[in-house]
Image 1 (cartoon, rainbow, N blue to C red):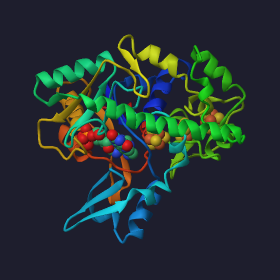
Image 2 (tube, rainbow, N blue to C red; image 1 turned 180 degrees about the horizontal axis):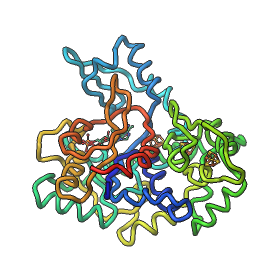
Image 3 (cartoon, helix red, strand yellow; image 1 turned 90 degrees about the vertical axis):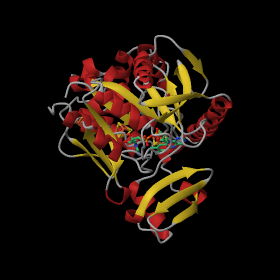
Length: 366
Ligand SMILES: Cc1cc2nc3c(=O)[nH]c(=O)nc-3n(C[C@H](O)[C@H](O)[C@H](O)COP(=O)(O)OP(=O)(O)OC[C@H]3O[C@@H](n4cnc5c(N)ncnc54)[C@H](O)[C@@H]3O)c2cc1C
Ligand code: SF4
Ligand code: SF4
Ligand code: SF4
């Protein structure tokens, strides 16, 4: 597999970008094969067990649900013979602690970000950030794979939704700091080089990662730690050590975005031009988009259309996606045929850990 695409939530995209920035230091050269990163908007997520438990409490078996949508304060479920609307308020109680401490709504480190906020029904909002993203979208439009609309008031609406998440969670972080509780280490945002990140990890390994990040609920389950170390396995969204650590090893602590995320440095590496907007990050263009083909996509199916187009045009030769497994359990899959991309269309409202799969799949040839 030479060139990979990746679709993920903001925390997964952060993990991926940090692994890329640490590529030279960790020797994990396979991370460089990810050449296209599509990020999703995200206000929060759930563990699979919580999501299934919530449905069961309302007498719904997850296996019967054909489509799930969270919007306008409700959870809309479509089943073969009926539809159901459940209150989001109830599900929100089970939102993971990591999500309550998360201040990225729009996947600020992706090539193109996608979400529903800001667009009319049936369309996806795209924030085009990098030159790679811009070239891909232009080609996809020229070749008729996606169509675009300008968003007028939509950008303001998007900014309001993003600001609401970021401000609320920033206040929560401040409150935890005052109480002496652990938070993601956001004081590292302005670090100027990756050597400083490595120095912060000095003398810290899995035991410290567990104590500071996992045991405190700060871990977002991205799996960056398990991607750099084969001794770690993600089990129910938690990184579990499966062996003994050699003395002096600090890789997992260094890889974790919640121990250090040098945001400005990562942005400067990724985005050479474009503008910045508070809560939205750096970007070149914001538009509404939808697939021109019939799609089972969550909103406009733009993400699915862009991944299919990237495969068809040879821009990438595989993509790592979170798909709907049995009973809506998230299943991470490497897909390389456009018909398989379609089977992964739609949103799975449960956290996955895709990054360790990158190591597994980077050497697969097709
Ligand atoms: C947990 C979660 C919460 C979200 N919250 C919001 C929100 O609050 N506001 C908002 O505007 N948008 C939110 N989104 C994004 C929205 O649901 C759509 O994914 C987005 O609008 C793109 O729609 P589309 O039709 O273009 O994508 P599609 O064509 O349907 O493609 C969706 C892509 O998302 C990937 N995917 C699905 N589930 C997951 C997952 N759990 N983790 C990683 N990747 C996944 C699939 O592999 C697929 O490639 C959220 C997405 C997720 C996963
Ligand atoms: S930590 Fe939670 S809210 Fe933040 S991006 Fe990840 S899943 Fe979404
Ligand atoms: S071997 Fe190193 S990277 Fe792996 S868990 Fe132990 S300290 Fe972390
Ligand atoms: S501990 Fe591992 S899975 Fe959790 S946030 Fe850090 S890198 Fe991601």
